[in-house]
Amino acid sequence: MLDRADMVDKADKAGKLDILDMVIRNGQVYDGTGNPWTKLDIGISGGRIVRMGNLSEEQAKVEIDAEGLAVAPGFIDTHVHSDLLCTRPEIHHVKVLQGVTTELLGQDGISVAPVSEQTKPLWQQQLKGLNGDIGDWPWNTVEEYLSFLEQSRLAGNVMYLVPHGAVRSLVMGFANRKASSEEMRQMRELVEIGMQQGAAGVSSGLVYPPNVFSDTAEIIEICKGAAKYDGCFVVHVRNESSHFLEAVEEVIDAARQSGVRLHISHFKAIGQKNRQKFASALTLMDKAREEGIEVTFDQYPYTAGSTVLHVVLPPWMHDAGTETCIKRLADPQIRKRIEYDLEHNDDYENWVKSCGWEHIVISSVASEQNRGLEGKSVAEIARIKGKKPTDTAFDLLMEENGSVAMIVHWGQEEDVMQAMAHPLQIVGSDSIFGGKPHPRLYGTYPRILGRYVREKQVLTLSQAIRQISGAPAQLLRLKERGLLREGFWADVVVFDPATVADRSTYEDPLLEPVGIEYVIVNGQMAVERGSYMGITAGRVIRGD
View 1: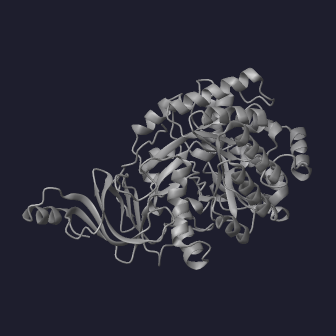
View 2: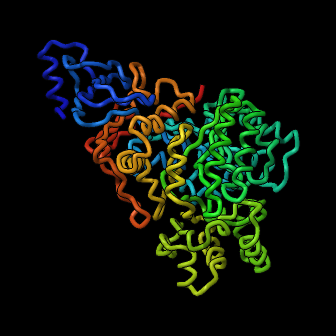
View 3: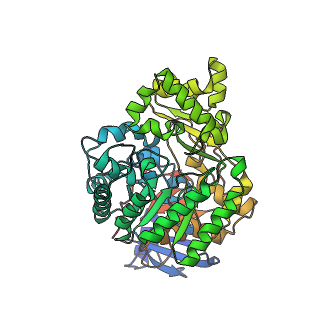
């Protein structure tokens, strides 16, 4: 790479007046459409791609020689939990290190706006184990939250979804009941306001309180609020195990009746006995497409998931918010009722019944006293403490006031690859910060390009790049991003197809990837030769 001052001096001597800010030469350019690579140079100025072609005669302040490297659009992560920590680049930069230049916040119907002074403390408590803690939230509305992000230092670009749970709690708290027609109307209007203020769609997580208490009619109504503004519906379906197919059918029907674009989050079938449902669920989505319903799904390239530990508790435990839920765990009679449900009830998403305590691993806690438990399964901790696994989990939730995250090992790699090869697949990391996190936080995108393109050959490189750039851009109706085109914003990744790989593991999840050489965000060099440069050129991308 040539020194900036040397290049400016060279250009001045040549009498050039239109010196480019940056040029990427000699690379194999994958434009994000799925087309084969093309030998092109890329010229960048003013944050945008201004020229593509043979630029051998052009001068630039910064030059990247990409000989032998792949040049791709910046990767777009359609499922993250960076809603708060995206404002802390010293923590959040691990995403740009793996090529992610845009993230979609507001996932699973449980996020940080809109809130009121009454609901804000409830959400701060419930989300601490998922989104982290940055102190006070100086916002209530979606507009105020996005404005806060615009005033923050962002390593990458961000977009936002209106969370179903947030609007439900504004209308009816955490009540365990169906919404009335008037309450559904109020929720739809709150979604519409969020869309007007810049959201890209609406999200729900139908296993999380208070979303879990909703029925299909309510889902249809909130989807109408997003569809009115051509937004998408991004959803963690109601069940990914025993009732997976019914859950997929429910959200397809919601899309059918509302007209919204449907995107299913972290597609999977939980538990050995449910493996055959992978193919059936893919068929359901194909048939919906044939019917004219725009449906896609995202998937992380691992056989384990990660979320907050209190989600293992049955829905009836959550009808007054997390704080009350945790206090209830002190009651021995309530514990007995929960234990019965965990052993026998599959009417809800029962992680314990589907996977077992030995496959539920504690990934982060809030206190130092329990830090040594991170990375151990609940079953292992129970043996150490001489307790039943149920009491071990309940006691830990009480000690940490609910701020506990877990990793759950749910499936087989063959099933992951089956879904990955499907044309409707989009890559999403579902990454969560803190403690001893899931390795997907550091490794998702290099893992796709290394293990599943180069080693397993599940995808061609062109296909994989489409599924991490062009396809998510289409889902989000992004303008001037997601593809390498003249006039588009210069979000660009340069990587080595021969060496790119994830290094993070469940045992050692904080290892940075290799092979991601350069990452450019809005025309600025965020990663150079694999190292983060401290650049915070990210922007808030608002929906039209």
